[in-house]
Image (cartoon, rainbow, N blue to C red):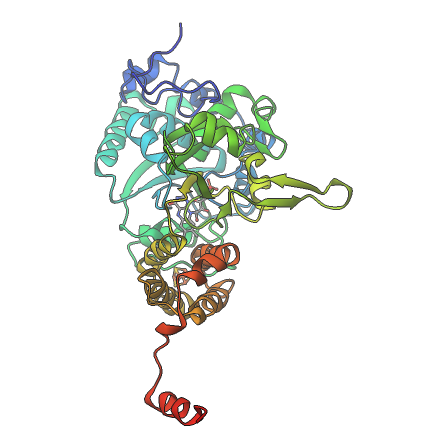
Length: 464
Ligand SMILES: Cc1cc2nc3c(=O)[nH]c(=O)nc-3n(C[C@H](O)[C@H](O)[C@H](O)COP(=O)(O)O)c2cc1C
Ligand code: SF4
């Protein structure tokens, strides 16, 4: 029997729904009863009869790469827990969903919490964690209550607590409400916050969470969507799962398209099977009437902007080829080869009504507000970039401001404790590299504020 979705919420033909299969179903609710009717927790029962290492092996075979931002292989990360570890191991679900342009995890926790919980129980068993946390964004209060209820239902069914299903495996999952800051999504900032402190990211090395995480014990931090995939990997088998998507970019992922398209929304597609053209024209209905596409920020606000009229040289040696913007496949490796990244799957579309100075200023405001302030280049630099781009966007900028901005960005990039430094400087670097002329056209020499001394000198140097 085919699944019925709410009117106007039906998946498109280009979609392949695994994670969002039950999102927006007309006959769905987030209860345990409904989840069990759909075969939920069968994979958990299977997992509990397996060797934990065999589950990690399936995840490795699947090629799953984290959906939180960096695209790091999930099975490989799990394998980083020191083999001779004697401390407790923790699993943390990163449900901070703080990257601007990203709106996928919230649908899972609101509508399908048992998918996440089943994925977490399997993952916790695989990595040997008996305590797991869901670090949930402060701005998702309703979702926190829904998950709380789902956790209670798991306890009632014996899917959480002591000796789960007679397997001898114990697990508790706790909810931790976030501290309402972007940096709480960075995994070590998140861990500090979970410990009750300010979310100051930790220096890596040595504080890679898999070795020295929560309470200085091995900790696996995974995104909501990544953890949900684990359930499907177990159901399909790692090899079968790896057939979805393209080489090195397997499975499905949810793309969140926002901005200047006729039909924005979320779309779950096989990774790399949809091109930029198919996504923006066929799936999102093309540009708004009378408008043309100008640029795309493909993986959340921290990814580098791509111009719609760009061509990229990708590959090396004999494999090198030109790739038109519209033929970009939406996968980790192709977007990286084009100088940007797939990030968190938040695709932000800009049309020709958008001034690039406004875009730059908008992004700079966000990062200046969200810097945790621990490192000087990030704390000061983001404030300066905001001030300079304020000036440009308000028509008071000077041509020199563009160079100043660029110089600040490069002095942040690579010089900070956490990747926020890159997240905030890459957009500036890319926007200036690709739209220098447009930015310069919005500045004027007439805006240069000269000191009294300079004016006096210029007067003196005037030819008589
Ligand atoms: C500034 C910053 C913010 C981040 N915000 C999030 C977030 O909101 N959600 C998330 O899952 N990962 C976020 N990440 C990535 C996490 O640090 C971490 O890599 C991720 O949760 C790992 O999960 P994954 O391997 O399943 O992708 C952020 C990273 C940085 C540098
Ligand atoms: S880079 Fe920025 S956000 Fe990250 S630790 Fe330094 S000051 Fe904090």
